[in-house]
Length: 462
Image (cartoon, rainbow, N blue to C red; front, side, top):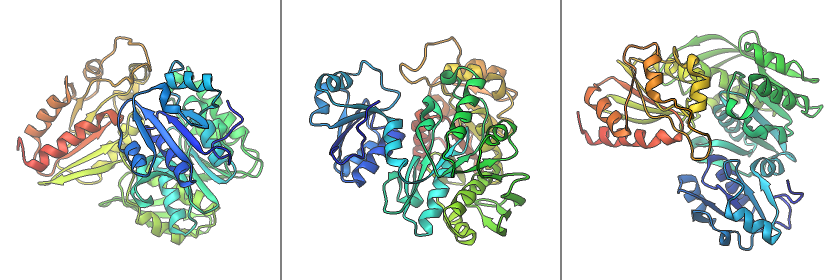
Protein backbone atom coordinates (compact mmCIF):
# COMPACT_ATOMS: atom_id res chain seq x y z
CA UNK A 1 0.00 0.00 0.00
CA UNK A 2 1.17 3.53 -0.77
CA UNK A 3 0.12 6.79 0.87
CA UNK A 4 0.41 8.50 -2.51
CA UNK A 5 -2.81 8.32 -4.53
CA UNK A 6 -3.44 8.48 -8.26
CA UNK A 7 -5.71 11.48 -7.68
CA UNK A 8 -3.05 13.56 -5.88
CA UNK A 9 -2.09 16.72 -7.75
CA UNK A 10 1.60 15.83 -7.55
CA UNK A 11 0.88 12.63 -9.49
CA UNK A 12 1.10 13.57 -13.15
CA UNK A 13 2.13 10.27 -14.73
CA UNK A 14 0.50 6.93 -13.79
CA UNK A 15 1.87 3.65 -15.16
CA UNK A 16 -0.55 0.70 -15.22
CA UNK A 17 0.79 -2.86 -15.28
CA UNK A 18 -1.87 -5.06 -16.88
CA UNK A 19 -3.55 -2.16 -18.67
CA UNK A 20 -5.35 -4.38 -21.19
CA UNK A 21 -7.78 -5.86 -18.67
CA UNK A 22 -11.32 -4.57 -18.29
CA UNK A 23 -10.80 -3.17 -14.81
CA UNK A 24 -7.39 -1.62 -15.38
CA UNK A 25 -8.31 -0.08 -18.73
CA UNK A 26 -11.32 1.58 -17.08
CA UNK A 27 -8.97 3.18 -14.56
CA UNK A 28 -6.75 4.34 -17.42
CA UNK A 29 -9.71 5.99 -19.14
CA UNK A 30 -10.71 7.77 -15.92
CA UNK A 31 -7.17 9.04 -15.37
CA UNK A 32 -6.99 10.38 -18.93
CA UNK A 33 -10.26 12.22 -18.27
CA UNK A 34 -8.54 13.84 -15.28
CA UNK A 35 -5.69 15.06 -17.45
CA UNK A 36 -3.11 12.56 -16.18
CA UNK A 37 -0.38 11.11 -18.35
CA UNK A 38 -1.02 7.38 -18.63
CA UNK A 39 1.27 4.60 -19.76
CA UNK A 40 0.85 0.88 -19.39
CA UNK A 41 1.93 -2.59 -20.34
CA UNK A 42 0.36 -5.97 -20.93
CA UNK A 43 1.27 -9.27 -22.53
CA UNK A 44 -1.26 -8.95 -25.34
CA UNK A 45 -3.11 -6.25 -27.22
CA UNK A 46 -6.72 -5.58 -26.33
CA UNK A 47 -9.39 -3.30 -27.81
CA UNK A 48 -9.57 -1.38 -24.54
CA UNK A 49 -5.82 -0.73 -24.42
CA UNK A 50 -5.77 0.27 -28.07
CA UNK A 51 -8.57 2.74 -27.38
CA UNK A 52 -6.50 4.26 -24.58
CA UNK A 53 -3.59 4.47 -27.00
CA UNK A 54 -5.69 6.46 -29.44
CA UNK A 55 -6.42 8.87 -26.60
CA UNK A 56 -2.72 9.42 -25.95
CA UNK A 57 -1.75 6.69 -23.49
CA UNK A 58 1.58 4.97 -24.17
CA UNK A 59 0.82 1.26 -24.51
CA UNK A 60 3.61 -1.33 -24.41
CA UNK A 61 3.28 -5.01 -25.25
CA UNK A 62 5.30 -7.16 -22.87
CA UNK A 63 6.92 -6.11 -19.61
CA UNK A 64 10.19 -4.20 -19.30
CA UNK A 65 11.83 -2.13 -16.56
CA UNK A 66 12.25 0.80 -18.95
CA UNK A 67 8.48 1.19 -19.33
CA UNK A 68 8.07 2.92 -15.95
CA UNK A 69 10.40 5.80 -16.85
CA UNK A 70 9.11 9.12 -15.47
CA UNK A 71 6.14 7.49 -13.71
CA UNK A 72 5.07 9.05 -10.41
CA UNK A 73 3.18 5.93 -9.34
CA UNK A 74 2.76 2.37 -10.64
CA UNK A 75 -0.52 0.49 -10.19
CA UNK A 76 -1.18 -3.13 -11.04
CA UNK A 77 -3.87 -5.76 -11.24
CA UNK A 78 -3.91 -8.76 -8.92
CA UNK A 79 -3.01 -10.98 -11.89
CA UNK A 80 0.51 -9.53 -12.11
CA UNK A 81 3.16 -11.69 -10.36
CA UNK A 82 5.47 -9.98 -7.83
CA UNK A 83 8.57 -10.77 -9.89
CA UNK A 84 7.37 -8.51 -12.72
CA UNK A 85 10.38 -6.44 -13.93
CA UNK A 86 8.42 -3.21 -13.79
CA UNK A 87 7.78 -3.78 -10.07
CA UNK A 88 11.49 -4.33 -9.49
CA UNK A 89 12.36 -1.16 -11.38
CA UNK A 90 9.77 0.84 -9.44
CA UNK A 91 11.07 -0.43 -6.10
CA UNK A 92 14.65 0.34 -7.09
CA UNK A 93 13.70 3.87 -8.15
CA UNK A 94 11.54 4.52 -5.09
CA UNK A 95 8.38 4.86 -7.19
CA UNK A 96 5.25 4.05 -5.13
CA UNK A 97 3.37 0.90 -6.13
CA UNK A 98 -0.38 0.55 -5.60
CA UNK A 99 -3.06 -2.03 -6.30
CA UNK A 100 -6.09 -1.73 -8.54
CA UNK A 101 -8.35 -1.54 -5.47
CA UNK A 102 -6.31 1.33 -4.01
CA UNK A 103 -6.50 3.26 -7.28
CA UNK A 104 -10.26 2.69 -7.55
CA UNK A 105 -10.77 3.75 -3.92
CA UNK A 106 -8.90 7.00 -4.59
CA UNK A 107 -11.16 7.73 -7.57
CA UNK A 108 -14.38 6.61 -5.87
CA UNK A 109 -14.42 7.24 -2.15
CA UNK A 110 -14.58 11.05 -2.24
CA UNK A 111 -17.64 11.02 -4.54
CA UNK A 112 -21.28 10.16 -4.02
CA UNK A 113 -20.68 6.56 -4.83
CA UNK A 114 -22.97 3.71 -5.87
CA UNK A 115 -21.10 0.40 -5.52
CA UNK A 116 -22.66 -2.70 -7.07
CA UNK A 117 -21.47 -5.99 -5.58
CA UNK A 118 -22.66 -9.60 -5.67
CA UNK A 119 -22.11 -12.95 -7.32
CA UNK A 120 -24.19 -12.23 -10.43
CA UNK A 121 -25.47 -9.19 -12.31
CA UNK A 122 -22.84 -6.65 -11.28
CA UNK A 123 -21.97 -5.46 -14.77
CA UNK A 124 -25.52 -5.14 -16.08
CA UNK A 125 -26.80 -3.51 -12.89
CA UNK A 126 -23.89 -1.05 -12.87
CA UNK A 127 -24.37 -0.26 -16.56
CA UNK A 128 -28.13 0.23 -16.15
CA UNK A 129 -27.64 2.46 -13.10
CA UNK A 130 -25.06 4.63 -14.83
CA UNK A 131 -27.26 4.80 -17.94
CA UNK A 132 -30.22 6.01 -15.88
CA UNK A 133 -28.13 8.66 -14.11
CA UNK A 134 -26.71 9.74 -17.46
CA UNK A 135 -30.20 9.96 -18.96
CA UNK A 136 -31.27 12.14 -16.04
CA UNK A 137 -28.50 14.63 -16.84
CA UNK A 138 -26.45 13.83 -13.72
CA UNK A 139 -23.21 13.30 -15.70
CA UNK A 140 -22.07 10.33 -13.59
CA UNK A 141 -18.57 8.95 -13.49
CA UNK A 142 -18.31 5.17 -13.73
CA UNK A 143 -15.97 2.19 -13.67
CA UNK A 144 -17.63 -0.92 -15.15
CA UNK A 145 -16.32 -4.31 -16.24
CA UNK A 146 -17.53 -4.03 -19.84
CA UNK A 147 -17.94 -1.47 -22.59
CA UNK A 148 -21.42 0.07 -22.48
CA UNK A 149 -22.84 1.50 -25.76
CA UNK A 150 -25.35 3.76 -23.98
CA UNK A 151 -22.43 5.36 -22.12
CA UNK A 152 -20.36 6.14 -25.18
CA UNK A 153 -19.10 2.60 -25.72
CA UNK A 154 -16.53 2.80 -22.91
CA UNK A 155 -16.00 1.06 -19.58
CA UNK A 156 -14.66 3.97 -17.54
CA UNK A 157 -15.15 7.74 -17.36
CA UNK A 158 -14.66 10.60 -14.93
CA UNK A 159 -17.44 13.08 -15.64
CA UNK A 160 -18.50 16.35 -14.05
CA UNK A 161 -21.38 15.11 -11.88
CA UNK A 162 -21.26 14.33 -8.17
CA UNK A 163 -22.28 10.66 -8.53
CA UNK A 164 -20.06 7.73 -9.47
CA UNK A 165 -21.14 4.16 -10.26
CA UNK A 166 -18.70 1.35 -9.54
CA UNK A 167 -18.80 -2.36 -10.31
CA UNK A 168 -17.33 -3.59 -7.03
CA UNK A 169 -15.66 -6.97 -7.44
CA UNK A 170 -15.32 -9.24 -4.41
CA UNK A 171 -12.32 -11.14 -5.82
CA UNK A 172 -9.14 -10.40 -3.88
CA UNK A 173 -11.36 -8.58 -1.33
CA UNK A 174 -11.18 -5.52 -3.59
CA UNK A 175 -14.64 -4.29 -2.59
CA UNK A 176 -13.56 -3.88 1.02
CA UNK A 177 -11.61 -0.77 -0.02
CA UNK A 178 -14.71 1.16 -1.10
CA UNK A 179 -16.97 3.49 0.91
CA UNK A 180 -20.17 4.03 -1.09
CA UNK A 181 -23.13 6.26 -0.34
CA UNK A 182 -25.33 3.53 -1.87
CA UNK A 183 -24.35 -0.15 -1.88
CA UNK A 184 -26.17 -2.68 -4.06
CA UNK A 185 -26.00 -6.42 -3.38
CA UNK A 186 -27.36 -8.34 -6.36
CA UNK A 187 -26.90 -12.00 -5.35
CA UNK A 188 -24.78 -14.24 -3.17
CA UNK A 189 -23.79 -17.87 -3.67
CA UNK A 190 -20.51 -19.81 -3.76
CA UNK A 191 -18.01 -18.34 -6.22
CA UNK A 192 -14.31 -17.44 -6.38
CA UNK A 193 -13.57 -20.27 -3.97
CA UNK A 194 -10.10 -20.52 -5.52
CA UNK A 195 -9.46 -17.23 -3.71
CA UNK A 196 -11.73 -17.40 -0.65
CA UNK A 197 -11.07 -21.05 0.14
CA UNK A 198 -14.54 -21.66 1.60
CA UNK A 199 -18.11 -20.43 1.43
CA UNK A 200 -17.81 -19.22 5.03
CA UNK A 201 -14.82 -17.07 4.14
CA UNK A 202 -16.67 -15.64 1.13
CA UNK A 203 -19.75 -14.79 3.22
CA UNK A 204 -17.51 -13.22 5.85
CA UNK A 205 -16.07 -10.89 3.20
CA UNK A 206 -19.57 -9.71 2.27
CA UNK A 207 -20.41 -9.27 5.95
CA UNK A 208 -17.34 -7.08 6.34
CA UNK A 209 -18.37 -5.07 3.28
CA UNK A 210 -21.76 -4.37 4.87
CA UNK A 211 -20.37 -3.80 8.37
CA UNK A 212 -17.98 -1.10 7.22
CA UNK A 213 -20.49 0.88 5.16
CA UNK A 214 -20.71 4.50 6.30
CA UNK A 215 -23.45 5.15 8.84
CA UNK A 216 -25.47 7.22 6.38
CA UNK A 217 -25.16 4.69 3.54
CA UNK A 218 -28.24 2.98 2.12
CA UNK A 219 -28.09 -0.69 1.20
CA UNK A 220 -30.10 -2.05 -1.75
CA UNK A 221 -30.34 -5.85 -1.56
CA UNK A 222 -32.21 -8.73 -3.15
CA UNK A 223 -34.73 -10.10 -0.68
CA UNK A 224 -35.36 -13.64 -1.96
CA UNK A 225 -31.79 -14.94 -1.64
CA UNK A 226 -31.49 -16.30 1.91
CA UNK A 227 -27.70 -16.11 2.12
CA UNK A 228 -27.75 -12.52 0.90
CA UNK A 229 -30.64 -11.52 3.15
CA UNK A 230 -28.72 -12.64 6.21
CA UNK A 231 -25.77 -10.50 5.19
CA UNK A 232 -27.88 -7.44 4.34
CA UNK A 233 -29.77 -7.54 7.64
CA UNK A 234 -26.51 -6.71 9.42
CA UNK A 235 -26.65 -3.15 8.04
CA UNK A 236 -27.30 -0.65 10.82
CA UNK A 237 -29.04 1.89 8.59
CA UNK A 238 -31.64 1.80 5.81
CA UNK A 239 -32.07 -1.31 3.66
CA UNK A 240 -34.18 -1.16 0.50
CA UNK A 241 -35.18 -4.60 -0.74
CA UNK A 242 -35.81 -5.63 -4.34
CA UNK A 243 -37.20 -8.82 -5.82
CA UNK A 244 -40.11 -10.97 -4.56
CA UNK A 245 -41.53 -9.48 -1.38
CA UNK A 246 -39.33 -6.42 -1.66
CA UNK A 247 -39.90 -2.67 -1.78
CA UNK A 248 -39.25 -2.90 -5.53
CA UNK A 249 -40.86 -5.99 -7.04
CA UNK A 250 -42.24 -7.34 -10.30
CA UNK A 251 -45.98 -7.95 -10.20
CA UNK A 252 -46.23 -9.29 -13.76
CA UNK A 253 -43.59 -10.46 -16.24
CA UNK A 254 -44.68 -10.67 -19.87
CA UNK A 255 -41.98 -12.14 -22.17
CA UNK A 256 -41.45 -10.42 -25.50
CA UNK A 257 -38.89 -9.54 -28.16
CA UNK A 258 -36.37 -8.02 -27.60
CA UNK A 259 -37.31 -8.22 -23.91
CA UNK A 260 -40.17 -8.51 -21.44
CA UNK A 261 -42.68 -5.94 -20.26
CA UNK A 262 -42.52 -5.53 -16.48
CA UNK A 263 -45.31 -4.34 -14.23
CA UNK A 264 -43.38 -3.05 -11.23
CA UNK A 265 -44.45 -1.98 -7.76
CA UNK A 266 -42.13 0.55 -6.16
CA UNK A 267 -42.15 2.87 -3.15
CA UNK A 268 -43.66 5.64 -5.26
CA UNK A 269 -46.32 3.52 -6.95
CA UNK A 270 -46.69 1.29 -10.02
CA UNK A 271 -44.39 1.51 -13.02
CA UNK A 272 -44.28 -0.19 -16.44
CA UNK A 273 -40.86 -0.90 -17.97
CA UNK A 274 -40.22 -2.50 -21.36
CA UNK A 275 -36.87 -4.17 -20.98
CA UNK A 276 -34.66 -4.16 -24.11
CA UNK A 277 -33.09 -7.56 -23.33
CA UNK A 278 -34.57 -10.91 -22.30
CA UNK A 279 -34.40 -12.76 -19.03
CA UNK A 280 -35.84 -12.72 -15.54
CA UNK A 281 -32.34 -12.19 -14.17
CA UNK A 282 -32.11 -8.99 -16.21
CA UNK A 283 -35.49 -7.90 -14.86
CA UNK A 284 -34.03 -8.19 -11.35
CA UNK A 285 -30.96 -6.24 -12.46
CA UNK A 286 -33.29 -3.50 -13.70
CA UNK A 287 -35.13 -3.46 -10.36
CA UNK A 288 -31.83 -2.97 -8.52
CA UNK A 289 -30.86 -0.15 -10.89
CA UNK A 290 -34.22 1.57 -10.42
CA UNK A 291 -33.83 1.40 -6.65
CA UNK A 292 -30.27 2.73 -6.72
CA UNK A 293 -31.11 5.52 -9.16
CA UNK A 294 -34.06 6.61 -7.03
CA UNK A 295 -31.62 7.22 -4.17
CA UNK A 296 -29.74 9.58 -6.48
CA UNK A 297 -32.98 11.50 -6.97
CA UNK A 298 -33.99 10.17 -10.39
CA UNK A 299 -37.72 10.09 -11.09
CA UNK A 300 -38.96 6.54 -11.73
CA UNK A 301 -40.71 7.39 -15.00
CA UNK A 302 -37.57 9.07 -16.30
CA UNK A 303 -35.51 6.08 -15.15
CA UNK A 304 -37.83 3.70 -17.02
CA UNK A 305 -37.30 5.65 -20.25
CA UNK A 306 -33.53 5.37 -19.88
CA UNK A 307 -33.74 1.63 -19.22
CA UNK A 308 -35.90 1.16 -22.30
CA UNK A 309 -33.21 2.95 -24.36
CA UNK A 310 -30.40 0.85 -22.87
CA UNK A 311 -28.29 -0.88 -25.53
CA UNK A 312 -26.78 -3.67 -23.48
CA UNK A 313 -23.22 -4.28 -22.36
CA UNK A 314 -20.34 -6.10 -23.96
CA UNK A 315 -20.60 -9.89 -23.59
CA UNK A 316 -23.83 -9.73 -21.59
CA UNK A 317 -26.31 -11.53 -23.88
CA UNK A 318 -24.71 -9.44 -26.61
CA UNK A 319 -26.22 -9.87 -30.08
CA UNK A 320 -23.27 -10.60 -32.37
CA UNK A 321 -25.11 -11.43 -35.60
CA UNK A 322 -28.47 -12.20 -37.18
CA UNK A 323 -27.75 -13.65 -40.62
CA UNK A 324 -30.03 -15.84 -42.73
CA UNK A 325 -32.30 -16.25 -39.73
CA UNK A 326 -29.47 -17.54 -37.53
CA UNK A 327 -28.84 -15.52 -34.37
CA UNK A 328 -25.50 -15.56 -32.55
CA UNK A 329 -25.25 -14.18 -29.02
CA UNK A 330 -22.29 -14.01 -26.65
CA UNK A 331 -22.48 -14.01 -22.87
CA UNK A 332 -20.04 -13.93 -19.97
CA UNK A 333 -21.91 -16.70 -18.12
CA UNK A 334 -19.35 -18.96 -16.45
CA UNK A 335 -21.18 -19.97 -13.25
CA UNK A 336 -23.94 -22.63 -13.34
CA UNK A 337 -26.57 -20.15 -12.16
CA UNK A 338 -25.58 -17.68 -14.87
CA UNK A 339 -25.55 -20.40 -17.56
CA UNK A 340 -29.03 -21.50 -16.54
CA UNK A 341 -30.36 -17.91 -16.47
CA UNK A 342 -28.89 -17.04 -19.88
CA UNK A 343 -30.34 -20.15 -21.52
CA UNK A 344 -33.76 -19.46 -20.00
CA UNK A 345 -33.50 -15.88 -21.25
CA UNK A 346 -32.79 -16.74 -24.89
CA UNK A 347 -35.71 -19.19 -24.87
CA UNK A 348 -37.91 -16.08 -24.60
CA UNK A 349 -36.70 -15.07 -28.08
CA UNK A 350 -38.61 -18.03 -29.59
CA UNK A 351 -35.76 -19.81 -31.38
CA UNK A 352 -36.26 -23.01 -33.36
CA UNK A 353 -33.32 -24.54 -31.48
CA UNK A 354 -30.77 -23.27 -28.95
CA UNK A 355 -27.18 -24.40 -29.46
CA UNK A 356 -25.14 -23.75 -26.32
CA UNK A 357 -21.36 -23.45 -26.60
CA UNK A 358 -19.59 -23.19 -23.27
CA UNK A 359 -16.00 -22.81 -22.11
CA UNK A 360 -15.47 -23.49 -18.39
CA UNK A 361 -13.19 -21.11 -16.48
CA UNK A 362 -10.49 -22.69 -14.29
CA UNK A 363 -10.07 -26.37 -13.50
CA UNK A 364 -10.48 -25.66 -9.78
CA UNK A 365 -13.73 -23.77 -10.36
CA UNK A 366 -15.05 -26.52 -12.65
CA UNK A 367 -14.36 -29.09 -9.97
CA UNK A 368 -15.89 -26.99 -7.16
CA UNK A 369 -19.08 -26.30 -9.12
CA UNK A 370 -19.18 -29.62 -10.98
CA UNK A 371 -22.44 -30.92 -9.50
CA UNK A 372 -24.16 -27.56 -10.02
CA UNK A 373 -23.22 -27.60 -13.71
CA UNK A 374 -24.90 -30.96 -14.32
CA UNK A 375 -28.42 -29.60 -14.75
CA UNK A 376 -27.51 -26.09 -15.93
CA UNK A 377 -27.89 -26.77 -19.67
CA UNK A 378 -31.38 -28.26 -19.81
CA UNK A 379 -32.81 -25.33 -21.78
CA UNK A 380 -30.38 -26.00 -24.65
CA UNK A 381 -31.12 -28.35 -27.53
CA UNK A 382 -27.44 -29.01 -28.17
CA UNK A 383 -24.43 -28.50 -25.88
CA UNK A 384 -20.80 -28.27 -27.00
CA UNK A 385 -17.94 -27.66 -24.57
CA UNK A 386 -14.56 -26.11 -25.32
CA UNK A 387 -11.43 -26.86 -23.33
CA UNK A 388 -11.29 -25.39 -19.82
CA UNK A 389 -9.55 -22.01 -19.81
CA UNK A 390 -6.96 -21.48 -17.08
CA UNK A 391 -5.08 -18.15 -17.27
CA UNK A 392 -1.30 -18.63 -17.08
CA UNK A 393 -0.08 -18.77 -13.49
CA UNK A 394 -3.58 -18.78 -11.97
CA UNK A 395 -3.68 -22.43 -10.85
CA UNK A 396 -1.92 -25.78 -10.90
CA UNK A 397 -3.47 -28.50 -13.11
CA UNK A 398 -5.67 -30.92 -11.15
CA UNK A 399 -6.52 -33.39 -13.90
CA UNK A 400 -10.05 -32.36 -14.81
CA UNK A 401 -11.13 -31.54 -18.36
CA UNK A 402 -14.22 -30.52 -20.30
CA UNK A 403 -14.76 -34.10 -21.46
CA UNK A 404 -15.34 -35.09 -17.83
CA UNK A 405 -18.04 -32.45 -17.52
CA UNK A 406 -19.63 -33.31 -20.87
CA UNK A 407 -19.88 -36.98 -19.92
CA UNK A 408 -21.56 -36.14 -16.61
CA UNK A 409 -23.99 -33.46 -17.83
CA UNK A 410 -27.68 -34.31 -17.65
CA UNK A 411 -28.10 -33.66 -21.36
CA UNK A 412 -28.32 -36.15 -24.24
CA UNK A 413 -26.18 -34.21 -26.73
CA UNK A 414 -23.39 -32.81 -24.52
CA UNK A 415 -19.98 -33.23 -26.10
CA UNK A 416 -16.52 -31.74 -25.63
CA UNK A 417 -14.57 -30.92 -28.80
CA UNK A 418 -10.85 -30.36 -29.05
CA UNK A 419 -10.69 -26.97 -30.76
CA UNK A 420 -12.66 -23.86 -31.61
CA UNK A 421 -12.44 -24.83 -35.28
CA UNK A 422 -13.98 -28.22 -34.57
CA UNK A 423 -16.82 -26.57 -32.66
CA UNK A 424 -17.43 -24.08 -35.47
CA UNK A 425 -17.44 -26.86 -38.06
CA UNK A 426 -19.93 -28.91 -36.06
CA UNK A 427 -22.28 -26.02 -35.37
CA UNK A 428 -22.31 -24.54 -38.84
CA UNK A 429 -22.94 -27.83 -40.62
CA UNK A 430 -26.03 -28.47 -38.48
CA UNK A 431 -27.51 -25.00 -37.95
CA UNK A 432 -30.65 -23.95 -39.81
CA UNK A 433 -32.81 -20.86 -40.11
CA UNK A 434 -34.43 -19.99 -36.80
CA UNK A 435 -31.63 -21.43 -34.67
CA UNK A 436 -29.92 -19.43 -31.95
CA UNK A 437 -26.27 -19.99 -31.03
CA UNK A 438 -25.31 -18.87 -27.52
CA UNK A 439 -21.55 -18.67 -26.86
CA UNK A 440 -20.83 -18.57 -23.12
CA UNK A 441 -17.76 -18.34 -20.94
CA UNK A 442 -14.79 -16.09 -20.20
CA UNK A 443 -13.43 -13.66 -22.76
CA UNK A 444 -11.09 -16.38 -24.05
CA UNK A 445 -14.02 -17.79 -26.04
CA UNK A 446 -14.68 -14.53 -27.92
CA UNK A 447 -12.46 -15.65 -30.87
CA UNK A 448 -14.86 -18.56 -31.40
CA UNK A 449 -17.82 -16.17 -31.46
CA UNK A 450 -15.89 -14.01 -33.93
CA UNK A 451 -15.23 -17.07 -36.11
CA UNK A 452 -18.89 -18.10 -36.10
CA UNK A 453 -20.02 -14.59 -37.02
CA UNK A 454 -17.51 -14.37 -39.87
CA UNK A 455 -18.39 -17.75 -41.34
CA UNK A 456 -22.14 -17.29 -41.09
CA UNK A 457 -21.83 -13.84 -42.65
CA UNK A 458 -19.90 -15.30 -45.58
CA UNK A 459 -22.39 -18.11 -46.01
CA UNK A 460 -19.77 -20.81 -45.52
CA UNK A 461 -20.74 -24.36 -44.60
CA UNK A 462 -24.38 -23.59 -45.11
